[in-house]
Image (tube, rainbow, N blue to C red):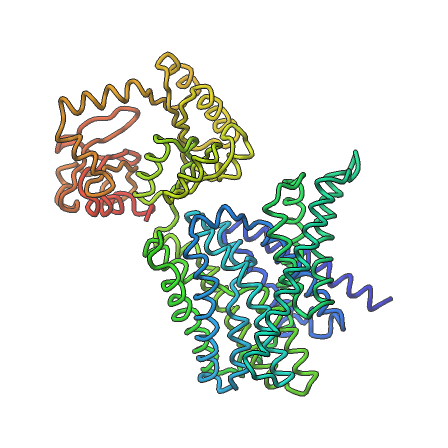
Length: 621
């Protein structure tokens, strides 16, 4: 009883520390894995000695296995097939060509830098293929990158978690059984992947049938639905493991993807419940595994270990990202961000720990030490530097765009979306017509299928993080309702609405919505072509050659100076066209003195305006 009591106290304490790590993550906008690993080291034998290798007895393997099953299922459940269309070519390449580059490249550097055999080097290489949702998701929570970047990183993490685990167990079994023939290795891989997929399909079908067609109870149906899904994940893992070792991860991933993309009832309640459970499990496992690490494993690697970590993070990762994303819609800055933000997560840590236990039991402690030391060294360095500095890296590369939600993917909505995306903004369209959704996606736009007058649809499209909501449908009633919902539920900085009937303009403006009358806009366009043809021709090139941008000045180099004094410091082919202050906008003369809080409009070519924006408001860049 005393041992059981100590175990309960230990588990409760680790969960409590994990909750503190999550709170600190939200408070300081740093991915939670950084705090989880730090707390694990402090609680481990190298510092406080609160947790040690013998703390869990023989239960460690089962605890870690079930925990990983829940974590992988959670990540797979959130993987929406629709999001894969945002970066289809890059996603496929990342989980195939990219994974192969990571496996081979890591195995080569481990073999030569650490002097280990090819089999052990390949085992380490297989484990370090995985980034994983456990480290990617916390990064994306604090770094709101463009949707195509987030989709590619999330998908890579989830798929590679599964393939890395299966590859690793195949190589591990090959080492133990001295299997070398490629045919036998492929058979081991196919057996585990196939078994997992089949079991995952079966469990997902049973859970879906129960959720859709069985009356779970009149009073507690949401609660029973949550428990059914969680139980299904654990059953899928256990059943697949009974068929073939390490097939469980493939099973829970398969079940999670299928159920997450199916039309299941109580989906919101299920998602919230799983999220809370996963948060607790993730905190517990990450802290536990970090606490089990002994520094002598890291020190024993010497300079070779640092070389491995540096090459994995600074050479192999950028290489596989650029090979996988070249020719797609990613900017160079986004490619660099993906290259330098690829920390390793829970799958390498957990599987390496379990393999080490087996190697030591079979009298191979040197292999166990190299395996654990190398994997954890890469995890520590990539988490500390890449996850810990992810937001700073994103800000330096300027890959955190302004999120704009556009309701209505018709001609007006798509044209606006393309113009904004050409300037680097993160645009999400919402459209309920299936054919229009497909057509817009074929044009390379990010489109969320749903009704824009539904609060949950707006939320799922990212309205909570949107600075601008623009409703561009041909129905004024829809546009007015969307504007009211956006203002009351999400409070973006700006709400824009297309008004088709000029008599309705007052109704929109009474809500504080910036109304854009189709009649007035069309008439103004005709007038501009008649009276200002050169200006119209130049304006049509905005986003290609010319640019007009407005920004609030914060630079001390501008405040208190006149436009004439600032002129020589501005980039060539760029002018200050307008100055807005206290609700009034004027064309400034040379004696106009700029004040803090003024909003100035730059006009010029693309590169010059971009430089001027950085000069006027350096905090934005």
